Image (cartoon, rainbow, N blue to C red; front, side, top):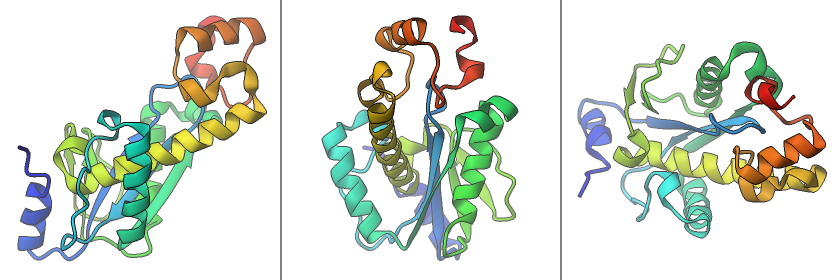
Length: 199
């Protein structure tokens, strides 16, 4: 069984008081923003079941997200809209989104753990962890609240743009979504740089 507090424990033992986990959701979809969350969690009351958000059911994610937001010492959610993604590319948009989430925290963390292999343009010491959302409790918490936030946002977009079934596909390139683009064209929340072949 993975020790999801391995990295956090090392940092706390080295003198860090506030450890931030940050993660992104929505790099791959054809529509909608990329969403990032940053969260500083207490380590004296661990929430059971925190894991990579992709491995959890929607119902479990929603339950855990509510618990995380209630217990968090500080959290911040940031998003980068499709127009900016098209202008600066998804990698740069993701890094900017993570940076904004970290800098949006009410408490400045002593250390930042990020999912993946990205280096953020921040002054705080940081470490990137491949598959960190499944290896680090803090990153896992960020992964869950970002996913729940983005899914809810895409469900709201489905009411405004019903042709694309965003409530079901969350903007990802499913067969039904691609057929809807071919049939109805693009809507304002589509990423033009991701959908060039169907324009």
